Every structure is written in structure tokens, then in C-alpha cells.
Length: 151
Figure 1 (cartoon, rainbow, N blue to C red):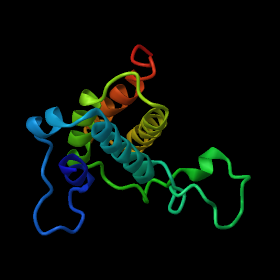
Figure 2 (figure 1 turned 90 degrees about the horizontal axis):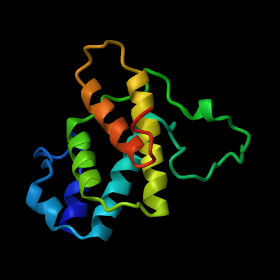
Figure 3 (figure 1 turned 30 degrees about the vertical axis):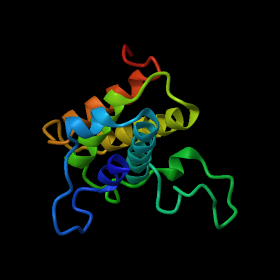
Figure 4 (figure 1 turned 90 degrees about the vertical axis):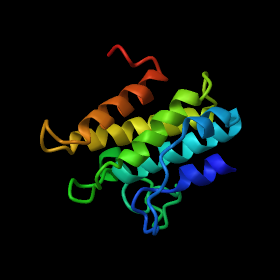
């Protein structure tokens, strides 16, 4: 329960105190089910923040329009938010603790995170963007679960 509540916070989400970064003890002591659940939560948040448009995360389309093409789901560059070092620290810690092979739900969430990382990386405007190293490592981690690390 401690892992899920600590991992659920987002840096700068309106809380009075800054959210805690992951501690080695908290992550190492977590069971596999809790780790996978927290990793799915972070992976889905990354996809939602950088790839999915507003209202797309729920899966149900209130308008009934099922003819959307994938490119229409991406947010425009000005809608994208900065990548949080807090979010990347939790994603890295949870991914390092998760057991492989991943279950189907976690695999789907990791594919979504890879899409989110790729979209955020594509939206960077400078090779000196401070979030670029975190995005690159996150994309390598998410892609590594699917044998994509060498491509």
C-alpha cells in the first residue's frame, strides 16, 4: 500500500510538500503485484500525458466516433507538458524491480509508455533540452522489454 500511495503522487500536483522520490528500501521491499500495479500506473500516466489527447485515456468515446486514426490521438506540441524528473525516477525504479516476463496488462502499459516517451522526445525543440536524457533512458527501458534495445 505504501508503494502505491507514494508512487501515485505527481511532482507539482498541487500538494503542499514535494512528492517523495523512490527510496531503495520502499522499492526493494515491494512485492511483485504491487510493483507491477505501480509500474502500470506510471506507464499509463506517461502515455496519457504525452501521447493521448484529452478524454482518450478512458477508452470509451462519448461521441461514438470509432473511425479515428492514430495520429489524431496525439497532442499538439503546445498541449504537451514537461517531463517530470519525479515521474522518470519512479518509472526507472519500478521498471528495475518488475519481474520479467511482464503480464499482459503491464506489457500493454509499457508499450503505451514507449509511445509517450517517443512523442515527448519528438516534441523537444533542442538537443540541449534537460528532459532529453530521461526521455531517452525511459524509451530504452520501455523498448527493452520487447527486444527493441538494439534497434
